[in-house]
Image 1 (cartoon, one colour):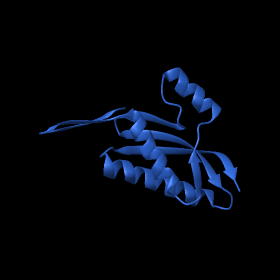
Image 2: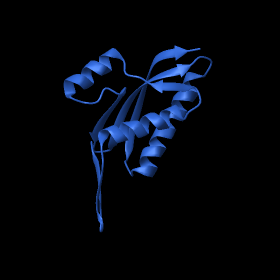
Image 3: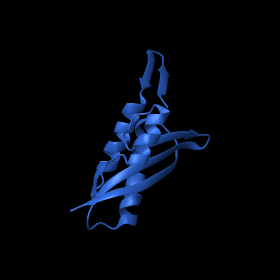
Image 4: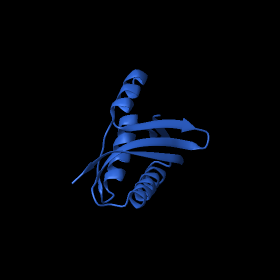
Length: 114
């Protein structure tokens, strides 16, 4: 899902890798999130699809982009609050910076650190 903008001066193309990096940065800005990590199942699926193995999967739908992220979080945070903050931060980043409509953000906690 490469994003392309056309202007009078030319075009701007944003790669999937750049988009997933932006998503990862937006997720880890939330206090309590350690990192976005790929789990084994996600890694295998991305490998088979020829996609980067980043812990983030993207699917385009008519209603907007659907995301799945695997997260490692810090111990002591309320999961529902943390998840809501990550979803809001990621959605806001994509919609504000790239004008990408986001329909769904699914989160999977794959680890908890001290």
